[in-house]
Image 1 (tube, rainbow, N blue to C red):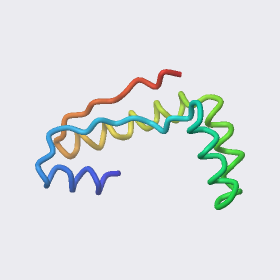
Image 2: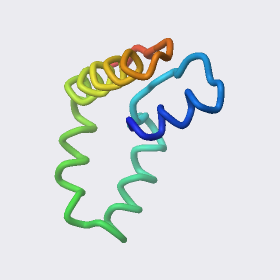
Image 3: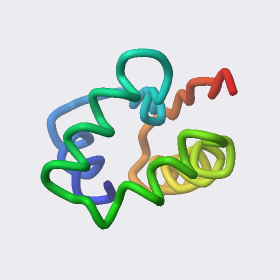
Length: 82
């Protein structure tokens, strides 16, 4: 994420809008199918994350806010809606 945001800054991007993975509705089922087929070892963690994504969302927001501050980008975070 840090390297990506650095590249965005060099490209002239003024701010980054950050949101976490949408685990609602049909998206949840599609992601589960892909994980089962290609990354079965991740399914248990994904199911737990889908039950309560707030800790993941909060950690992502804190991490990207700090990176944006270091990179000199404005930061906009989305609410989790959890």
